[in-house]
Length: 383
Picture 1 (cartoon, rainbow, N blue to C red):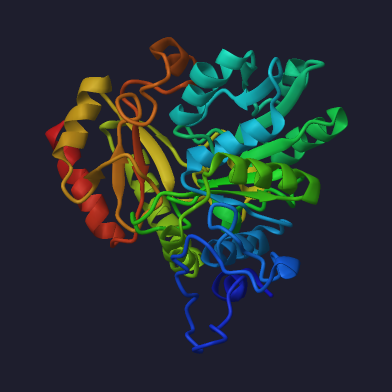
Picture 2: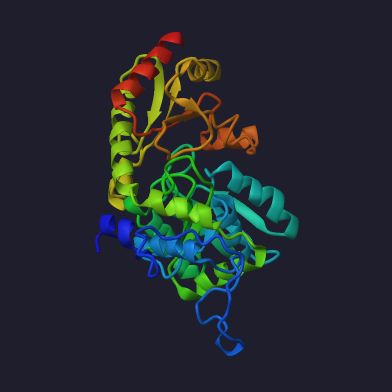
């Protein structure tokens, strides 16, 4: 089946008892077994270890990205944590993209370092830098591409080749492009991590996460952590995410089209100093974006002339764009990473990787692009 068909039908079937076309919400703690000798015959025992509604969502994601399994979690950070717990021993070393979500940075530097794990935040856009950072105790490479919020790209194939050469699992945070635009496992990654809160849900209705995994051995390790730590996604969230995922492609195509129009408008505006969007020819890694993804996504960032003060004034002047921390929803959102999503990262580290005080991140939604541009124009007039 092609992607658009799988996003609707993979992992689900009409309820065999009632014929209901939507997967039921199995809001049950425990599942009655037919006998002691037939324990687990029906596949479920206790919802911390597995739930039919959650499993349907996991099966859909696995089908969409070509994985053998896709354990789903309560949040995107729970998914990242499960990967860390599954593959990092005490005293191990991990390589992470130097531009990464603030929560990933916080988990690494303030939690796992307490157990002797060391992290190198590397410019993963440079494969040679990744190769140079590998040590005898490196046990994981985690790349975020496009990176949040600068949108810097990592060549997934090149880094996966390095990881395979050294026998190190390579996980890709694929939240910004989703399996619809970027097939991380096809490009050689071992795992593709998602905050399902974002585009897979698409409606600002849930928080969740998932790890799509290429091999059964790795899947077993992540499943063990999911069960042991009790961080499985809830049935209601899984059900809502199932419905959101069915419209992923049509939402992303329209949002990406809107994003291109907005990026072109901002690039031509005399009050805008810088615009970054992978679909623009001016984007430094435009050719890589075209090569490893089938679309450019709906995230962009820009800076207005006048720095941080001007950027904050612009954001406070927006009307249609909501000032909020999420992304990937049908509503357009504007975020100030320095005070919101990336506040956990020290100022000097933010500056080193290009997260400036005046950077405005836009998550482009499904509204009419003309209205979104008009709102930006009004805000820019106030700067």
